[in-house]
Amino acid sequence: MTRKRRFTAVIAHHSLIPTLRVIVVALLPPWLGYFFAVTLFAKNLSAISVPPLDVPLSTLMVVPASAVAFVVSVVLLGKALAHTPR
Image (cartoon, rainbow, N blue to C red; front, side, top):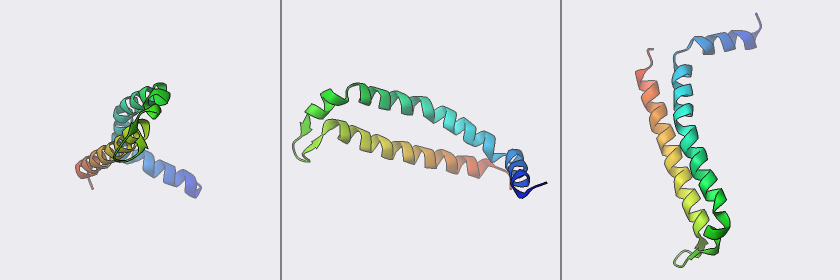
């Protein structure tokens, strides 16, 4: 058995992988929906500039959403790691 196959077999039997799949499946639709909506209205949102920051509104919406999605991903991953048997 090659090293790559052995590594793949170990990963497949680890209990974290199914949990990660659940996390990805849970986060992917809202993430795609949000960015589809922002992309759909990007020209309209980019025409609006936020005065104190002088940044287009579309940018101002995408950056915090990315930060929130990252934090939620880290929290869910932390919970998944806390519940895995060692």
